[in-house]
Length: 301
Image 1 (cartoon, rainbow, N blue to C red):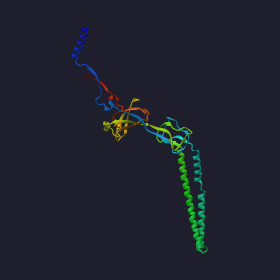
Image 2 (cartoon, rainbow, N blue to C red):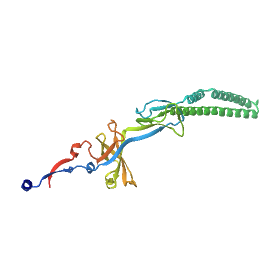
Image 3 (cartoon, one colour):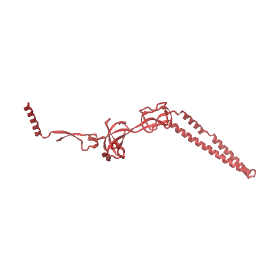
């Protein structure tokens, strides 16, 4: 048994001396690959904007006009508040705006005062009216003109009040401030929306995503606002090109890293918010997958 093991060892060493060093497989990245491919900076995606939409006026929730998860456009009505009392005020203001009696009365009085003044002025020329009567007639004309002006100003005030009430009536319908998706309603029908708690729903913009990264201090000089970057969405295994729109002016005191935000277009909704992401490289083509794949080569040791 001992001799058989000794013969086996001699045979192995003889083959190695005859054929040279053994070939060993070694993993090496391609020379042209970016450093970001093999030591990616990790981050996460989130909606570009998220807002807790608030009501501008107080009141009772009358109805929801859309459902949770619905896509809405800027200006779409999301929720209606009870505006029955306010509509009555609008109607009263409309009636007051359409009233013309006060102004018509003031104009008629002005016309009568002017006619009387002209008659007294004629009589005074014939010395059939005293200067005091002429002065009183002139003053009455001036007062009548002031009454017409007052009536016209009241009409303008009623018009402004009607515009104000109409604008407030539109606020009873809570509108979307931007295009997005209704994430959650915070108020149910019949609940009170007050000044202390005016939020009615949460709206998120998903047609554009913001991908946030924490960049080490040594890589900060490579990243500039306005530059482009390739982002790998790990969960969906998709790549997208985005533009860098924010770089923090100083590193975080705890992590010693810079916050970098990349804007990624998501009009087709193929990318998800809340996904883990990798910052692969800068100013590169995201579709060049084949050239960036690591290769397995044989090297002699």
